[in-house]
Image (cartoon, rainbow, N blue to C red; front, side, top):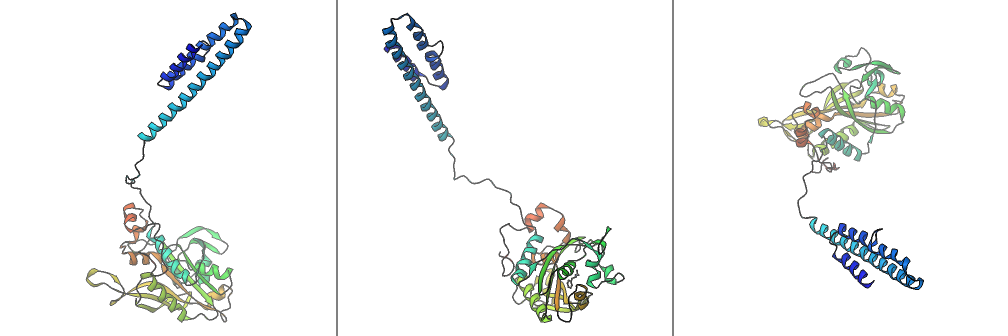
Length: 355
Ligand code: PHE
């Protein structure tokens, strides 16, 4: 018995792989194994001897099984240690370059404009891009036969809505109407969004973006309009003393109306915003026409307001030196990598951009 035990334990120790260890297990404890064979011999012994020999064999069986388990664990540990050593990670290696996405200059510009006007107390409002004729034109004091309709190069759609023919909105001004019809003054909203006109060249695209502004209150006057827009232009372009000029103009929905120009110079083919001998138009504005207030159910003897409409592409082209408007929509990744913005370049309130 002692010899059997010593032999089997020696075999366990000698096994140098999990497979060899398993072979030892089968040879010792399996159905045809050495211990099993001894067990079978017990039948020929006297009862007293049989009991003692049986106990001894069982003890050997347990010892061998325990030795096999211990050896298995030790082997697994050794294997893991070897693996850990071999697969060590070098955390000092440089990372693999990752392609980052970019914010489109249109999105960036909208964010900047909203940040500046938001700081002044404007709230963002929205309206549908597919509008009814009445909201896009009639309520804005542009009746059916008005020449301004031709200027808008409207895309008409087949359907007819509750308030007239369906059109792709030609400006964001219908959001003024929706706001005045659905909420009571005082009002102070901005409405950024897509607008559509049938027009296409280096400075026009059939789809473009505007941001509308509307303020209506009992004491709102032209001084508020001027102050608000002068502050806006200076903050957006980041030029404190930027010259801003209000030039008389005409829009059916504002009276009086003006176009706003900013000072610039074009000396030697180089364009610069700020001081200079030239002017560049950037937005349209005016005091809300009393007829428009009345069309929306607002008492024009009690309330007055101002409105403005800014072309986003125009602002983006000027601020970021983008020469051709059509490139905004070509989805050229090289262009976006050049003119785009990092996702974390959150617009700041001062100057409109923290670069
Ligand atoms: N809706 C006008 C346009 O698209 C701009 C504008 C808005 C003018 C508000 C005055 C007031 O040209």
